[in-house]
Length: 136
Image (cartoon, rainbow, N blue to C red):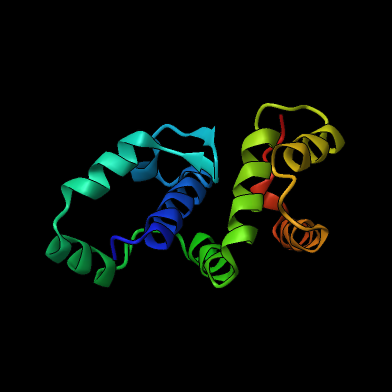
């Protein structure tokens, strides 16, 4: 579980939970980093857990996550890491940018390695889940 892909997906999961307003995730602050939004506090908490604690935590789903949020998370987490990187980067940029078109351009310029297909997948996901884009 202590692999780079595992850490990446935990970061993106907690970022999405924070973005949707899930109270326990609000204690982590995120900044844009190499692979999208990243929380050093979350990384420290992750490393503080031993392997047994990680297995136990991952087998106990948070039952207080609202069902609509849980469904969106499940759908997002079934997709690729590049998709998660693009989605969370766009949501982070959009949070500080009034113009949605400008937010798309900025996110794409920050992540030029993500393919047009990934960005179209992100756009389609956000179209299907318009509540993820918070009005500014």
